[in-house]
Each structure stands twice: as structure tokens, then as C-alpha cells.
Length: 506
Image (cartoon, rainbow, N blue to C red):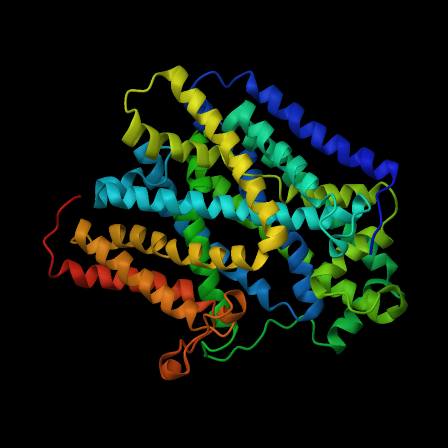
């Protein structure tokens, strides 16, 4: 499918991007020192932070992939939302007070006090690498989704795809560069509203487009069991409700507890109450949005099941929603939904990476006494570097996608010990630097074993399939259990090591 946006659609899209830049310029007036660049004056209202945190849950991957999952299957991934209330309770009740008391804008400064410099540097490096790669992946996928808007067919060659990535990189970089975290938060809040509008419009149009309306959608969905949540068996071998819940709980705790994006939002709040409120409100807003994205996929199944001639053969499930956007939405509304897809991706988080580089690397190891002017220059320079690196990763994916997918998997392995190390510090007072290192090393090796033994790993990294001789020690559970087991391994091994190793720092 090769198509293009109409002038009304391009006008809506242009207004969206221009609005982001202008909002960044407006915020730049208040960004005159490094602390404001990083912490936005520590005076952000809770409702703005809630919208930004809510938007951080969604990327172009989930915006497009979640309808694809419910189109192809059922609502099993929605179980992810079941863990949000519990994770939000821990986030608001434990993590927010912990970081607010410290007064630090870095999520990892306390790791140095607890385990020594290696722990802080390890966590910082992992977050930076993961965030840059994630942004590169999101930029690549968003460019693929936008390609038809400009008449580009990615399947026929790279064409103008890299130029779309460069343009996206510029937009994703310019507002955090000029306005820092202040601009990132306000634009994040605005993007969340556009994102919601895009999903609501898509859902309304597809429901109205099914002969028989919403009632027919429910009939088709019930007939094909599209609203099922998966198996309720007490098994870890497949994506059962229990497995998805445990995975979601681990991932959400990681977000609320060690994700620099969230921790920096806590630091910008004008009060402890606003910081706690943003956690609860952001989580509460995400649940109905997720439900709507899965409902879009279910409604699309009914739409094309009742009108099969509208969907060409061979269209993958994750491409059905983009196909609907470009072929069924009227002019103007199509541009709004495409803007919603962009809103789910253009919250780059480069300002959060720049903050870590400044606090945990540059001032920690290179220039502890850097002046205010130098610090601000480093923050902006790091933001530009992040934009360039993410675009380079996205462009590289055009030709070497399998290689980068493998690197993405290995980066996940490297970061697997972050949450476990944080929990070890909270739960085991005996654990010192050496016990923490043992826990991270053991947990990382466990994650490496579990990941490499998955059948899908051989598809990502050809030639590195699991040896037949080791078939008996292959990880027997579903891949969603990897972060759960990995986190538990770090805490368990670190706690065990603390019984034999004297507590010491560094």
C-alpha cells in the first residue's frame, strides 16, 4: 500500500509539529540555569505531570502494536494493566517519598551511597544505552508508519525513509534542547491529549464503519472469543494471566522505581502530594486508554470480517491499523490520528539522558567543579548528541535490523539487574558493595541463560541457537518470566552473598 496524506491532513500534522516547537520556545524563556533545565524549577503542578507520565506509558510501538495484538488474538496483553494499581501504590507510597527526600534529580545517585561508584555508573550506562536504542527503534517504526503519508513504499526500497527519520529526530530534539525538562513535560502533556484524541477518533470511525455498529462488533467478538484474557492455569510455560501479571508487576515497578524519566518527574513536582498524585493519576488514565487501543483492534477484526474485500491479502496484523488509517479515515481526521501516532513517539526523553550524563558521568568523573555556564552547555550538547545517536540507530535499522534486534535483546540482559539491585538495597540492609556485585553478576548470567535458551533467540541471532546437548537445561517457562526471575535472582543471590561477605562500600 502506497498512499499519501491530503493537504488538510498535512495541515493538521504541520500544526502539531509547529505547536511542539513553539511550546518548547515558550518554555525556553524560563530555562536559564542547569537546575531548571533538569528539574523545571521544581514547581510543576501534579495534573501536568500526570499527563506526561501517562503519555510515557505509550510509544508508537504500543499505539500501533496493541490494536494488532487484539486483532490477531484476544485481550491477554490487557492483563498488564491489572498490575498497575499495585505498582502505583508502591510507587506513590515508597519510591516517591524515597526520591523526594534525597532531593536528587538522578535516579542512581543513591546507588553510589549504597553500593559504591560502580553501581551508579552501571545503572546510568544501562539506562542511557537502553533509552537511546528504544528511541531509535521507535523512530524507525514511526518512519515506517509515516512512509505512506508521503507516498513512500518501504517494501520497494529505502527511498526517502531516512529523511523521514532525520525530520523526526529534529522534532524530537529541538524542544528538549531549547527548553529542557520544562519543555519536555509541557509538550509531553500536550502530546498525551493528541494521543487520546487519535485513539478516540479511530475507535469511533471503526465502530461506525461496521455494518450493524457496536452491536455487531460485540457479536463478532463474542463468536471468536476476542475478549478473552487468556488461560487462568497456574502455569509459567505460556502467557497465562498469572505470567502476564507477574511480568507487568516487575516492569511497572521498574518504571516507578528506577526509570530516570519517572524519577525526574518526581523531582520536578512542586510538592510531595503532587508527586504522589501524578503516579496515581497517570496510571489511572492509562488503563482506559489501553482498553480503547485493544478495542480498536477487536473492532477492526469485526470491520474486516464483515467486509473482507476492504483488506488486501497478506497484510500482517500489526499493519492492519495503519492500513485502516490511510484508507478509511476521512481527510483531516486522518491527519489527527497520524498526529496521535507521532505523539506516542516524539516524547524522546533526551533531557533525562542529558541529566544523567551531566550528574552521573561528567560532573562525577570529569569536571566536578564545572561552572553553571559549562553545565548548561554540557546538558544541551548531550541532548543534541542523543538526537544524532537515535537517528543513526534508526537509519541503521533499515539495512541491519536483525543485528540491532540482537543488540536490543543483549541490552535488555545488561539492564536486567537494575531493579534487582535497587530492591536489594531496600530489602537487605546487610548487603554491601561486594554482595551487590555478586547479585548483579549472578542475575545477569541467569538472564543471559534464559534469553539464549529461548527458541526465538535463534531467529534474532542466526547461528546462536541453543545447543542440542543442553536441551535438558533450556529455560522451561515463558519469556515474560525472564525479568521476574532475573530480578528475584539478583535479590536472592545478593542477600545470600551478604551472609558471607562483610558489608563495605565501594
